[in-house]
Amino acid sequence: HWHSQDLKSFINEPHTFIYGENQGSILNLTANAATKSREGILELVKESPVKIIKEMQHLSMPAHHDVRIEDVNMKRLGAMLWTTHENKPEDFEELLLLKGMGPRALQSLALVSEIIYGTPTRFEDPARFSFAHG
Image (cartoon, rainbow, N blue to C red; front, side):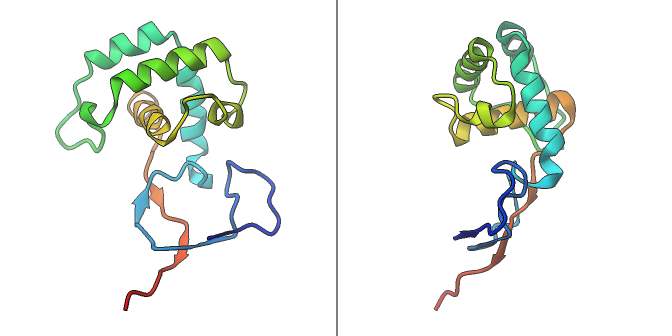
């Protein structure tokens, strides 16, 4: 359940609180701390899809890094890079409204943005309260 009495933006801290089970660190691109991540994703989708896909195929991450190549669905990422390249979203809201931009595609873009631009992807879960389990 989500409460937003004075909603100003759907992409930057749209809720005053969320009632749910706190999951700890999650991909929360609405967090104020995710501003750089959202900007990184928008920069990423402006690049040539061919260039990004080529670079991702040769990516090698240190074992200690939180993002691994197997975390990114290359087929979905490629499809969304072409879709965004053709539609040229002007802001994050437009990006989210693109056909095919679901949670997994957005996660792939966020993870690649983290690798390329160093923008974090894990933020505290905004759930303020937990459900009771009896």
